[in-house]
Each structure stands twice: as structure tokens, then as C-alpha cells.
Length: 340
Ligand SMILES: Cc1ncc(COP(=O)(O)O)c(C=O)c1O
Image 1: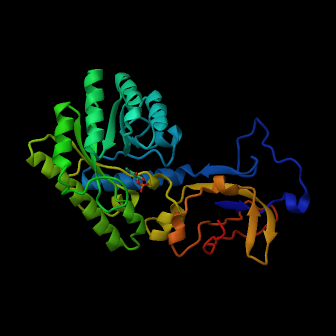
Image 2: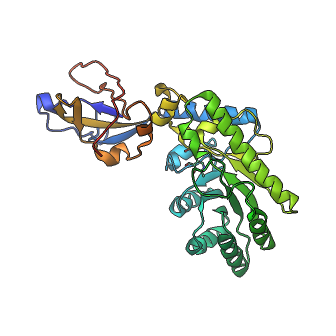
Image 3: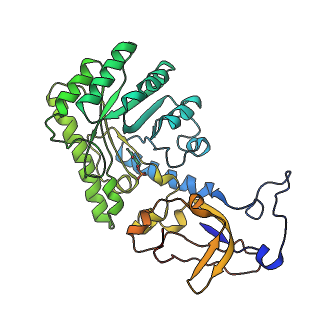
């Protein structure tokens, strides 16, 4: 966040509008607004791409973080490439923009299958995710009825963070068979969400190894049961940046790495200088007795993500560089925010 000491509090300027002919600058638009530093974004994207190249695994960026076609265009050099999404609305926007290789990485609700099939009919390879026999039966039935394959990945739980089957779950092979009988078995997917609590390089390396081992073990069990496994998909930003060996993995997913955030800076996955997204706000009040500034940003502009609450740092970086009064840039981690 870039909190901007207001010129209006001292000089009562009444207009802050950008002349329509002028290119927008940080001094122009009404606050609050988000700012993406494209140079940092390119740098952050290149950093993970170089890692993935070294590891010999293609990237499937998660676009739920940026939620932007413009930002996504930076991911694959302007050409629509493989992406991960978390909603069908995102899927539909990206499909309309020419993306044809999409993984919808949230457990499939059978009621959403008609939209999935409609997208498949438009030529999108849209993978769905599931972790139960019932879901597998629904996907298989919908695929048969539509006369098309609906590629499905079985979610593997590598660290207890979200859904999925343990790699040694007895029902794994049965689910694989239900999918394969309908031509729908695509592979396995896991996401090491607990890596958001891995505070050292070593913890993240272990999380990455566990993420890979879990997915590869599950894929091995399916193959041992005579089932085809094309995709072995792993990833989160902390583990993607820590993985040392991705043997057996076919793709790496991450989304946060595009802009990074204070959670990643707090963990040490990036530095504050790597953060590529800021919110510019105007300071509309002071409560010095509490150490507060009050801004026109509000919760929604600042995100209600409380990821940093578990860390020892606060969740805003305050940068007063927009001040017209010559106030020096201040950068501070606020103490933990309370009173939510
Ligand atoms: C299934 C899945 N894959 C990948 C990611 C991307 O991880 P990150 O946000 O750490 O980059 C997420 C994020 O929640 C996810 O849910």
C-alpha cells in the first residue's frame, strides 16, 4: 500500500482530476486506486520462469491472483498459454480471450458441469478437479451424455491444508478407474498451502519435496493399477521458489509470484522491493494517540486477506512518497492490526 498524505488536508485543493488528455500519473487520479509496477511484475515473472526452466518443468500460472488479462499477457510473452483458474467466471473470461488450456483447480460441483461442457465444446481443454467417487461418477456421466471427454485431475492432499485424498487413500484407484472408463482421467494435482507457514528456506524446501513426493506417489499408485496419468501438477509460490527437484512432475503452478505480497515478503520468498502491486490512498485523518492514520482506502481496497496476521509484521507498507509537502518517504511495518 502506498498511503498518500493528502494535499487537501493542508491546502484544501478541490480538484484532483486527471485531465482527460494527460497520461495518468500517481498525482492524478482520485484515490483509492491500485498501481501495478510493470517492471517489477516482469522481473517477478521472469524469476519464476527461470527457475521452472532450470527445473525442466513448464509453468501453469494461477490467474486468480492477478485476475487480469493484461497481467496474464506478460506470463507467456503475449500468447495465451496454460493457466489455472479458481472460478468458472475466470474460465469464461480467459476462454473468451483465446486461452484454450485451462485447469479449474477447485473441486467440481456437479451443477457446474454444463458450463464446463459448454466451454469444452468451444474448443477449450478445461480440466476439472475432484476428490470423491461421487464427483467422479458425475463427471463420467456428464461426459458420456455429452459425448466428450472431460479431463479430470484427482486432488491429492499433501499437507492437510485443503481438500484432496491422501496419496495412500484406498479409494484413489477406484476413482481413477471411474474416470478412465469414461476417458476422463487426466492426472493428479496438489497444492502445498501449508507452505504459507514455512518461515525458513529449509522449511520451504521440505514443503516442496513433500508436495512433489505426494503427487508422484499418487500418480505411481494409479499407474500401478494400470491407469494412465498424463499430468502430475504441483505448486504454490513458496514451494515453486524452493523446489530443488521436480522429477516426475509435469507442471508447476503458482500465482502470487506475479506481484508477490507482504505475506511472501514476511516469509522471505521475496523482498519488499519485489512487491509489484500497491494501493494508493489519501490520508483523511490522524489518530496520533493510537498511532493510526485513516485513509479513504477501506477494507475492500486493502484486501481482507489476513495472511500477515500470522506473521510478526503488520500488513501495510506505508509509503508517503506522493506527498506534496515534501514529507520524506516513510516505510514501516505496522504492528499487527487489531479490531477487525
Ligand atoms: C490449486 C492451487 N494451485 C496454485 C495456487 C497458487 O499458489 P500461490 O497463490 O501460492 O501462488 C493456488 C493458490 O491458492 C491454488 O489453490
